[in-house]
Length: 260
Image (cartoon, rainbow, N blue to C red; front, side, top):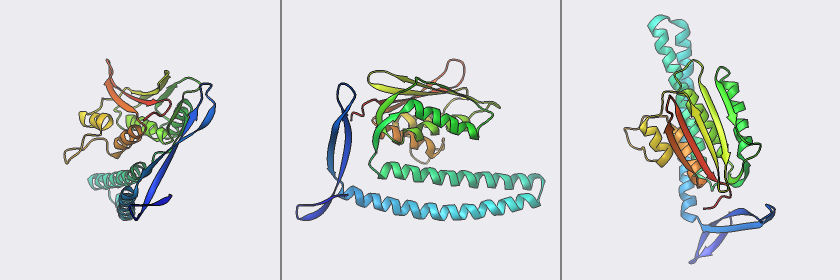
């Protein structure tokens, strides 16, 4: 990161470059924007240190808890075995939450890296990856051959989180999730449609507004916050709608050319 002297003191500046395309869609150059990020860099460093320490301590403690619970589960039966199994599941869930916290720290601490992304191809790759973990689910993709946008390179993480969230909260033996990609002159739209029981108002507020905070929030965890921050930093929007019969449609819309 370049440093300069500002008001007699050393200052850090961040430069973000955006590709510029001519009317024929050929790369014509780049546009650079410089910002003074001295204070932001200090806060970012503090955030990273706290995040690293917390995740390290939590991961080690939860690993011990999980291993002990597995040993206990193998030595008892009945209600005690069931209780030990719940400890194993919750320890695993907390470890996964810790990993998502690292992803969120990365999104918030770093300047968003933008580039040309074929969102249709990203969706197909996401669904193929999720299908390996959910072989019993009905996963489908409806997308054009290409759907490019100048957007965050992390957009696939947001899409994958939405697909996995739909499957995790399904109450069906064979859940169904369809991911649809559509384009217009201004934006690329990704719809994640499921046949589950619906989404709570708190989780909807997280996705749409990033607003469900406080002690009362006990919704879908950090994954939906990750979606909100990735999409919002890409100058995009998220909407949530109920289907007429059953299920939920989550729609992510991001600008095609990355305007601020």
